[in-house]
Amino acid sequence: MTDASTRRFKAYRRGHRGEWLAALALMAKGFRIVERRYRTKLGEIDLIARRGDLVLIVEVKARPTLMAAMEALGRESERRIEGCADLWLSRQSDYGRLSVRFDMVAVLPWRWPVHVQNAFYGRN
Image (cartoon, rainbow, N blue to C red; front, side, top):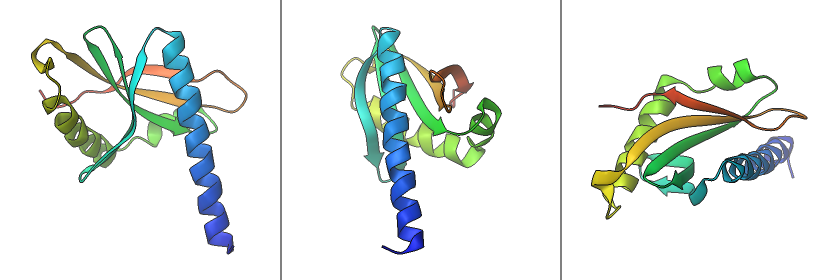
């Protein structure tokens, strides 16, 4: 393996571990994980969680600090996530009843994941 491929593999594993921890934190709050790494032609949503009629579209960021995680969620990422969320929501039979929230879970070293509600607001 080259240096670059080793780094990519480590980042991929860190991402999977972060998503697993984030899912665990959300399940502890009573959410059911309905999708992991939901992929569309527009991009990917890390986690989609649901509790009743509330649907969380969750971006997971593994960073050294909460501030670094928040800064890693850029405008371009938000637009991509919104587009993916629109596709997922359009395929739900109970679409009209659902409330949607765009959250982030920051996975920080040696801490329980931090759930940031309304990390950004989707299009209205």
